[in-house]
Length: 285
Image (cartoon, rainbow, N blue to C red; front, side, top):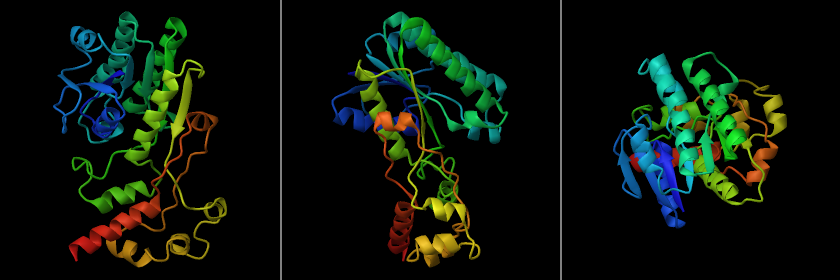
């Protein structure tokens, strides 16, 4: 199957490309940047370039719409309101309109849990993007899945994180690992490809957690960091020495029926992060 990846040089596309190729799919990757890795058909350009997008869409069966400016671009001042509107709103309309004109009826739209709070350009334009997606699904019989992931910027994105521990302190707040989210994307593609599955489907995508409901409800009742120490006793000293905030209680999203329909089960939890931290420390000793 030929699958268009908008944002084809993004972190997510970088992870997805070899996985799609391994299962026999052919990614068509459009992005203003050159990708970090080869694979599939690479088209350098913008989804705001409608003739180029039409050409990219000409022989695809399905679309994964990734391209967007994110909260990090707003917080750091890298992008302004015009930028967010152009890519997140107009770009999304271009994707769906071009898909409709090209006869592409299966679209996976990557949204965000940031639509639930805040008042910035990122949230507002991603809300509008979802409305565009739902409108096309209703008016043009598009089979649509919308995934709303937690932030999934990987530790290896050095433009955002200066170190593994900086990423780790972000992850402990509550997040999804990019490998888990890529797994959710593949499940969503399989879901879309099955005409018996009902659409549209909207699913929040969270990571894996080791804490019990009782631990979360009675967080650190024995002092700061006590819940972490009880759960990961073998890693407590290492984590504190590395600068990890072990008193941070994660915010966890409730599991939804949509996740069950997809068959999504996350794998990467704080236990995996701590094991990776230990390996990194051993390698540098």
